[in-house]
Image (tube, rainbow, N blue to C red; front, side):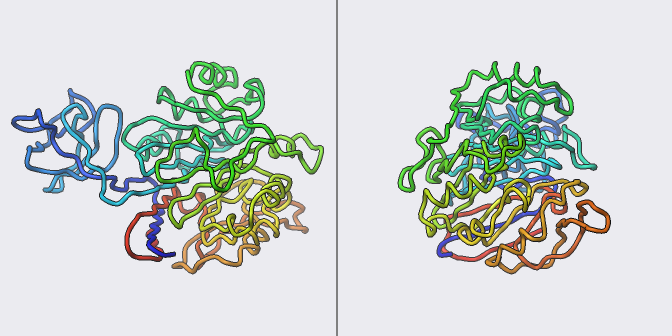
Length: 397
């Protein structure tokens, strides 16, 4: 891909640099570097007017930075300014939430867009506090969500929202169905508590219907991602089967993100009917993407058809599921349908299949030398695209 660098960082706690921090013009002496994001915390050092600090993360009221001498700590946002990197970036962070989905998009204009935030089973080694810390550290520095897209009312796509997002301001919320549909008990709160949180957001609520979609030449007008374009491809498509789970999954909001020569598609739990709707609606060449987050966690019985995978031709595949899930997600048969994956250094992945002798789905840990990654084995997965004059992939894990 011309003029494109994609960096995949497979880490348990994202901390890619998003710019540098300098003292504001009103600083006469120095800005205090503290051990914790609190004015009562101990002083570790100082940032002087002629100096710069590397931005590591952002939290409410403070920047987490590294000074020139290597000392890390927190400086007050009130006394500092952010100078963004010279190259515009689009960053996609696939958070490890266990058997669920949460994808954070950092836009080139410093906005944040979140797609889903839920799980039915947390990772064994993580707590809600761990996931919240990873989420907040991955936010762009305005510490708001320009848009939050809840693909559909399955608990593994929304039940962590009130715990993880909390009081972070949200401008737009896209969701399907009725608020009453989001009634599952979450890990730490009930559906009624989620509904209360949801109703108090004060956001602009958008409910896409089956005829709501964005044209190839016109990205969504409500989702402001700067030079990156966000297209809603489909929502609330008629289910192929009458099963309640199929109907709920078929409601999924399907999303494409485009930035320069990079494209990604994220589909929630969209079923074959949603995939077929999108295939009929758009030109196949336009649907050819670099990155595809597996639909329905990598199910082969409801999603990720051969026709769909042949049209997308993804070079990178991301699977979001638990290492101990009972569904065999992601299915080996789905991965075999992705014939255009780029080569990569060998790394751990999980895949599943149905064992006829055991009469159940089983998960296997294996090695992959392709650009196929799973949150279950790789943790939080960060994909960064930059406007630079080189091409190719750099993979670190």
